[in-house]
Image 1 (cartoon, rainbow, N blue to C red):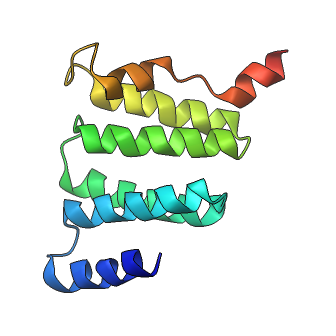
Image 2: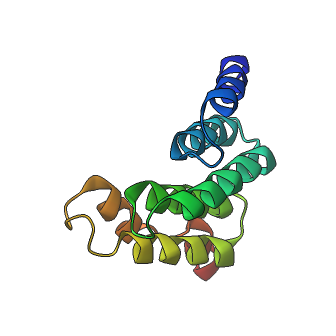
Length: 122
């Protein structure tokens, strides 16, 4: 993690404010935190990345959809089915017609059903 935070400082010093590359770095930091079950810290980084992406990328950009998909999975892990569904739908809306139906990202987003929703229904 130390190297990611060092990279973040470098990015912030050399890139203009709101640059999409900083958002990608924040997503990577969030992914690491999520894998270590540090969901609150991951959420902070995903939301910061999403804010940058919404300000700097078109609404149908795959990076934006991927961040929303990651947020959906994170909310699912946290047991928040409503937020997971919300983020999943936003990811589907964002990706729209940008990628073809067999693209791995579009297929993953389309197939996402929150685990908490499945276990709640059983």
